Image (cartoon, rainbow, N blue to C red; front, side, top):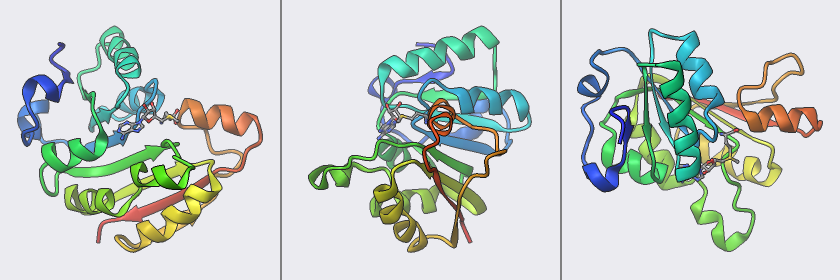
Length: 194
Ligand SMILES: C[S@@+](CC[C@H](N)C(=O)[O-])C[C@H]1O[C@@H](n2cnc3c(N)ncnc32)[C@H](O)[C@@H]1O
């Protein structure tokens, strides 16, 4: 294990002390489902005055990002390889996160699996708990059904607004780059902890 990669199977599902984790009190940005880490890595380079936590369930992608963080010697990223709902619920303190980013989460299109979606009431409740007052969130998908279910679910927990990314907005993640190149519609909801 590297010092910047946390495996809660080894360290336990206990509340993190984010000051201790990063060694400073800079605002913490959380990404759920970081994939290969494009958003996390580029943001960490562009915003050295912020700390970043990437939660990624897949061990393969977690390892990919870990190698990239190591290669670039980035000191403001921490990685957690587990389910984001459990990590939020059991490991993140109240009012500790300035931003939550969720790009192209698995849509779980079949009805019987939709309870696994990360945009669901119990996970939104955790997002509300962990965000600081005035903290913001962003959810992006290409999946219209998911968007249509997620937008009112988010609005039940946060002031929020839907937005369609413009053609000139730079893609933030690999999936966004791929889907926009294919001309797919992209749906975005931004929300704010009041
Ligand atoms: C479709 S990919 C999108 C990756 C990246 N965000 C992007 O836009 O390029 C979804 C990612 O979320 C991860 N994931 C799915 N469910 C998750 C969960 N409950 N907790 C953490 N990561 C999750 C998957 O392993 C996968 O890497």
